[in-house]
Length: 332
Image 1 (tube, rainbow, N blue to C red):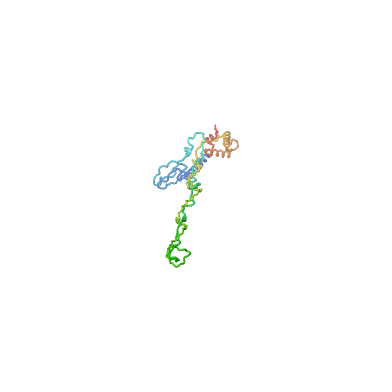
Image 2: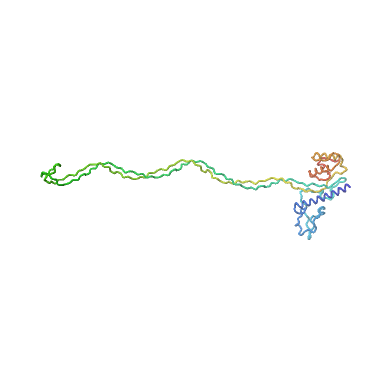
């Protein structure tokens, strides 16, 4: 009865795992579960893939309608593969030992990827102008010319002028000697022709020595020292490169999908109460919560065992010798 139940359970687990494996592979790689290229056949296969073809290892794509297809390449996978996964019966079975098909949980790994979150760019930065104070001598008033009047120059000089000119005229005298008559006694009966000398007078007069004139006077330019602000360095714009920004992201990827394989399990006659309690103690020490130490496997014990197997990548299902080894429990 136990053997029949084990076979039934194993067959169901095998079918479920194979179907899941086929679906994951088809979805992940966009083709058949074993990586068979449909281009290998010129036409569609006469027989489509079926559940039995997948379960019993037949060619997943059948045979081409016109000509036989070449042998398909084996499934490319990172999962470890051995005869325990594909055999209908446990390989290398030994007399008196128990075997069961268990579900090997999917294996994942964390990969670190570097993603760009912002592309490299550049920005413009304006550097303002700088100024300084300088002292300069600047022209406050330009040079010019001015006309100046030079007055005339005069000098005093003496000058003799004739005030009465010389004259000749008749003079009546009393005598006929025509002597120089007395001025007081000019009355007479004799006419004399007399000559009177000219009379002169000395006067003092101002004479022009140099006439008035104009002259041009040059007025020099006027300067003053001023302090003013001038540009020392002009304003400019410079380009500052901005490097790209990256972010490191940890991503969990599937390494090996969930699968089914044969495992060497503990037979019921060897699963003593002492062994059960040791398994429970080891599960408790590993951080899991089994049931009380009563020497029996209860549902909560099987849940704790399955959780331990799931976490450690062991076959989930029965108590296998590989699980006992990981728990540090030996069976006599």
